[in-house]
Length: 277
Image (cartoon, rainbow, N blue to C red; front, side, top):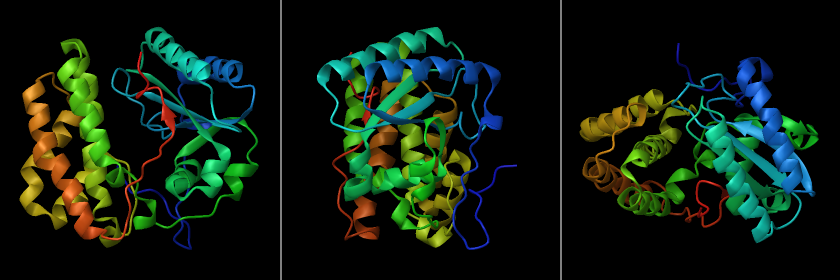
């Protein structure tokens, strides 16, 4: 049964990821990822798995393998080029997933840059440490389910612009991936609009949809369509862009009303999703 993220007796969110949630194939594949990260970044601090694989919700042929590394200093262009090549190569190797995403983020940015506050939450409650010391993750502050957790809507316009550029330019065989990615982003961003009302936290797409439409019932039909396309992606460019325009950019506008004092997050971890091939 789908449920909100678990909370402890004091109302703080609990990290429920763990090695017991990983499939045997995923465990073996993570060993390869660890070796590649260690080869690219001699200044490596730790490596994490997040997303559906870490949460025990991995769907073969639908889910990505999402990982990120904490590093000590700014990565070189050659290292990012290596990271992109590794992502492409491993994505072809591991047929169970759609894409192997590799990210890197500087440890001091997580600690001291307010634009990276959301990464504290990602590490604390959404990620499973696959290599490195547990001290950093354990020392991060506990969090409760409220608007301090939101991040997507403050970078949503940039993400939607990027998605449209991809969808309009890529081969038809790749459109389904970006449909899936974009619709997931929109659905989870919709939940961020109502998190202070719900006082719960989830990344589950259906729960995000169900809670959002309680407060925005006039968006129920278009949001359900986005949910459907997130689960059953299509390759029709016009239909995808129609939802981006009608719901995605509407969320951008609505977020400025709901959170008038929040600023756009300019920075984000460097991800192979956004690096040019």
